Image 1: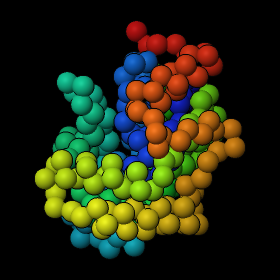
Image 2 (image 1 turned 180 degrees about the vertical axis):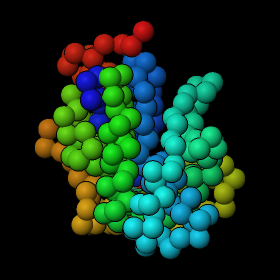
Image 3 (image 1 turned 90 degrees about the vertical axis):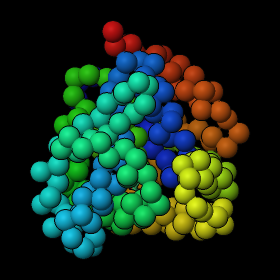
Amino acid sequence: MSGFAIAVDGPASSGKGTVARLVARDLGFAYIDTGAMYRAVALFGDRAGLDLRDGPGLAAMIPGMRFAFTFNDGAFQISVNGEDISRTIRSQEVGQGASAVATLPEVRRALLDTQRGLATEQGVVMDGRDIGTVVLPQAQLKVYLDAEVSVRARRRYEELAGRGEEVRLAQVLAELQARDEQDSGRAHAPLSRAQDAVAIDSTDLTPEAIVRQVLRLALARGARRDP
Ligand code: DC
């Protein structure tokens, strides 16, 4: 990693994806959504008929997955082996599967190499749960985004309802709390704030206000817009 790296960590629906994407777009940096990579492993593992507790089996599948992240007409896309899976991976079901496979050390190890390989010379914004602590501990800027759980649940509910999924707010809140517990309580690379991360509470802030703050910090620390 020789370019400028920005690590954005935080719990589900904290707004980190939106913020990371906008910051990457503004700086002309690559954007890597590591949560989408765990989601892709859950999706492909399921399709391959693997048990989502089978760490070695899932890890063996990962070298055969070619990840590509692109911006298309302003929208972010992830594809694996040429297949655009951006929408498919956003369901609640795939999200639960992702949280489960993310507890497996073999899966984390296999994805770690891929993730580090994606942060090369170009500037990069990477978001997830363990970017500042494990994946890119040398990142020049680390941001930890959080918000009250009720606010995160409402955001998630609106996102799902907006896509036509039939969900109840109480159910979304319960699933979010279960996911928080699994992501923070697991033995390997749990969600936690790096000591040198800048903490931002997004409860009462718009994504644009957070983006401005992150851009100010990045530029002050020497980030340069990629032409
Ligand atoms: O951010 P997300 O909801 O798309 O992430 C899906 C799951 O993947 C989440 O439950 C935790 C896991 N994850 C992780 O363990 N480490 C990361 N760096 C990113 C996501």
